[in-house]
Amino acid sequence: MSGATRTERATAKRAIAQAKRAESEVRRLAKELPRGTSRAWLERSVADARGDRRAAEAERRVAPRRAARRADGAVARLERAARISGLRRGNERPPLAGLLDADDRAKARAKLIKRHRAQAKQAQKMAKAIARGTIVAAVTTPSDAERRNERRGKVNRRRARGSSADADPTS
Image (cartoon, rainbow, N blue to C red; front, top):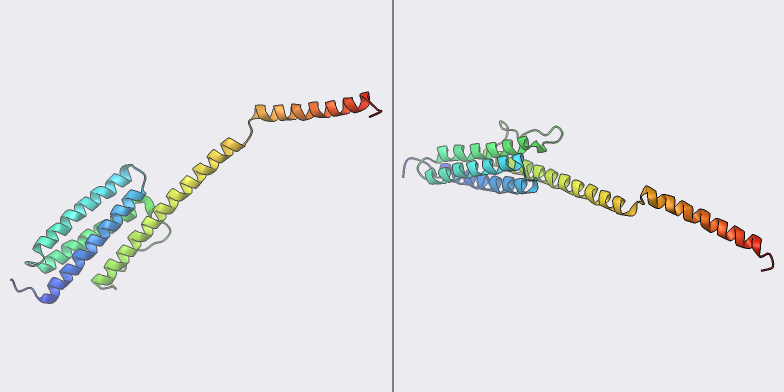
C-alpha cells in the first residue's frame, strides 16, 4: 500500500457511498419525469456519474484523496443535473460548500435531490388530477343539444299538465 492513511481511505469510502446514494436518488427522479429530453439527459448524467464512481472505487486504495475528489465531483454533477432538469422551485440554495464538511455536504445534496424528486412527483399528481377532472366534466356535463331537449321536455310537460287540467274540470 502507498502512504495513504487509514482516515483518507475511510473518507474516500464514505464519498463513494454518498455518490452511490446520489445516483439512486437521481435515477428515481428521472423515473418520475415524463419521457423526454430532460429524463434522457438525467439518465445520461447518472451513467456518467456511475462511471466516475466505479473509477473512484478502483483507485480508492491506491490514491484515496483522488478517489474522494472524483466521487465528490460526481455527486456535485448529479446535484447540478437534478437542479437544471427544470425542477428547481423558489429560492433553493445549493448546499453550503465552504461551511460544511464533506459528509454534511453529501447529506445536504441527497436531501436536495429528494426534494426535487418530491416536487416532480407532486407535479405528476397534479397533472393526473386535472386530467381526471376534465374527463369527469366531459362525461357529466350535458351538451347543448341535450340541454335544448331538456327545456323542450319541460315545456311540453307543463303544457300537457295545463291542458289536461283545463279539459277536464270535474276530476
